[in-house]
Length: 281
Image (cartoon, rainbow, N blue to C red; front, side, top):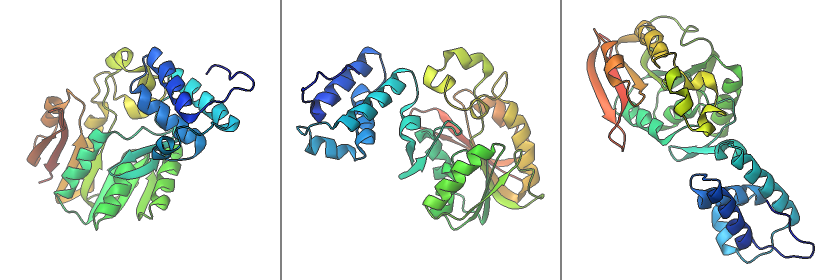
């Protein structure tokens, strides 16, 4: 951010315009919205407050924080990691670089899970806990969640506490902490980006989100190969597995479900196959 000349008065509206221009010149997506979110975060207010007070003077402390946040964003840090927040299924979740930022596409996993009521559910690779917490609040199920990252589990536990969601967490690889045939449903948004696609990713994703939560081996399918037999072990007969898919992973993942029944595919708003679910015999 440019320095404010001594004695000059900077209003909230002017600060927004300057932030918008900086972000736009740097080809940051949604520059106006990003400027608003970052300024609201610097002030500690909601975005609507900015418009009601657009002619108010910007306090020096607000300007300092706003400038720092803009600098971080210009360096490629995702807005969600700067503010520490991301909305998912109508609720705000805390996020840090220890967890993947929840995407709107993952809400389709919730929508599909709601179509198949279950008594006991397991979210494998919970990350921020967005899926597990949402399922605990949107259903009457007993919900468990796992992650190999203890740092991620700390974030997930905090989000569960924030929303008073009864989720039981375990640090383990996949579902190794649990006995066979313990669950009515297993859900997961596994890492599904192929290593070969690394260079084509947006820098905000590639350079800042946790690698373990992004990449699924050379072809993006490594975790599916382990997760599907693990789900078969964990599910009761008739239990359902629900998996988020990468944009091109439907056919190879569906081929891994030989012997499963009632296979269903749900598409996202762009028409991309997004959730694959199947029932254990």
